[in-house]
Amino acid sequence: MDLIKLSLAQIAPEPGLLDYNLEKHLKYIDEAKQAGSKLIIFPELSLTGYFLKDAVYDVAINIKNSCKNKENSKNIENTGLNFKTFNNYNYIIDSLLDKSEEIVIIAGFVESDEDYNFYNSTFCLSGGNILHVHRKVYLPTYGMFEEMRYFKQGKEFGVFNILGVNSTILTCEDAWHLSSSYIAVNKGAKLIIINSASPARGIEEGNDKFSSVKMWEELLSVIAFYYKSYVIYVNRVGFEDGIGFSGGSCVFSPDGKKDYSLEYLDEGLLNIEINLDFLKNERFKTPILRDENLDITLKEIKSIIDYR
Amino acid sequence: MISQHLPVIDSINFKNIHKLLINFIKEEVKRTGVNKIVLGLSGGIDSAVSCYLAVSALGSDNVAAILMPYKASSSKSLEDAMLVVKNLNINHYIIDITAQIDVYFDKIGSNKSYYNNNSEYNKSNFNFEDKSKESNYELKLRMGNKMARERMSILYDRSHILNSLVLGTSNKSELLLGYGTIYGDMASALNPIGDIYKTQIYQLAKHLGVPESLINKAPSADLWQDQSDEKELGFTYKLADEIMFLLVDKMYKPEVVISMGYDEDIVHKVYNKIKKSQFKRRQPLIAKVSQRTINIDFRYLRDWI
Image 1 (cartoon, rainbow over the protein chains, first blue to last red):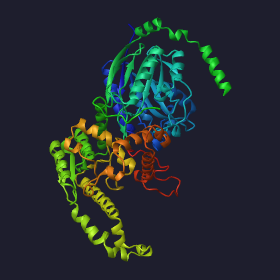
Image 2: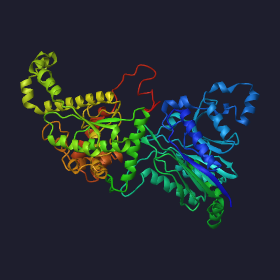
Image 3: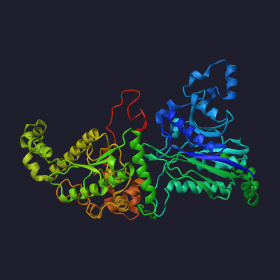
Image 4: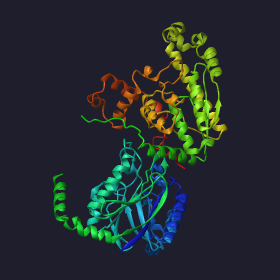
């Protein structure tokens, strides 16, 4: 049996209150650890809140400055500079790095880089190190969303190893572009972790879900089924200026079925177990990924780009 | 042509909508450090729905209703408001606004000498006698607006005494049509029903258990006797809501809505009302002088902490 115990932390961050949000993270991390989980996943921008507008500037963290990060601290020592003075929020990353000795932590934050660009980022901390940072690639800037106004686009859909399993992190809108999960699974991802801050919207007759929730769950099922992967969706709850985030965090297994889920609109922690034997079985029975022809895709995409 | 209509709030989607609205009140109120709300209860369906939602969210101890009749208000309105108070077991205060409204209009506002002494009116050869004859409606409108602002003023004063926030009671239909008084009934700290059309308010009311006598009467601002929203607007809410759903929620252009079979005149009338009342839904304009101007490029959430 190839099992992974993990936790989905569906929280309501307060916009701009990083200390408050950190406390909430620590509380959920402790609960997840007690439940025996090896991995805990928080929503998009879980440490900062979502509709930050100009406050993006105030809450950004340059993780390279975090001195507790074992690998980075070596580099910082080499430069002879004390980067810690550059940013007040390093202690937040540091205290989560401490916690990551016992449990892998995925959480969202506003990242700033050495060139003072800002990103809607998600880190994965493990064993006291920063294992991976995903910078959101597709930044929605339409309707109520204005991410491109503040954030720079990420450049890739990285695949990295969590607890022996190749995984990827897609942040909210990233997942709406089916190319993102296509790239990730072809790079070897078996666990597709989607963290989001999705507002509840749209009333439909005879439907007990908001329209936005219905579309999300259909998408997650498609990704899980056709890419034969586990899809772990962690969405936030709470309100920002009257906009309510829908929650309903859930896990879709490679047969496209929803295995576990949290309530809509309320905070909650879901401790679950996923079985990779089940994924192997699905991939054997329906070898869509094996048959995927990247050469055709590449040729077609190249011709599209050339034609344009 | 595409067939699309305003979705009904039914027993299936009600559960989610109810939870969202309750969480909205709970969380947005709590965030301010206050845990109570105060609202004006008119005896109409909108304020009743807001009140039922507030009690579900915060409990009856944390909701206070202010009933503010004017002498011309229908007695049925007060009875219906009291029915809500009784059913929900909430604190209530009855404050009659007749005295201050009448003092203003008898002595100051509609007084002939006021107009005659006012140089602006003299310049334009304003004749109050003619004016009042030709336009009784004008005076009614002014009085209605004054009453709405008087009630707002009382609500905000009470909210201070009761350490409460003012809960809004304007629905999406009247907000879009501009069928409300700016800085009057449109003023509030937070509004749970501002994204719900009047047609849907009736459906929501049924699921919330609002008494039938409030649901089964013609919508009226009750600013004067026998006032009717729909008579005044020139179309029914049912029709306007269908049109506004297509214009606003679906973002279809008026010509597309007309092509879907809606009456051309009414579509244009509704569309123009929405455009002309935009000012009521926004903060006052500020002349930009500096590098960073409030609401222009000084941009933070209202929930900014």
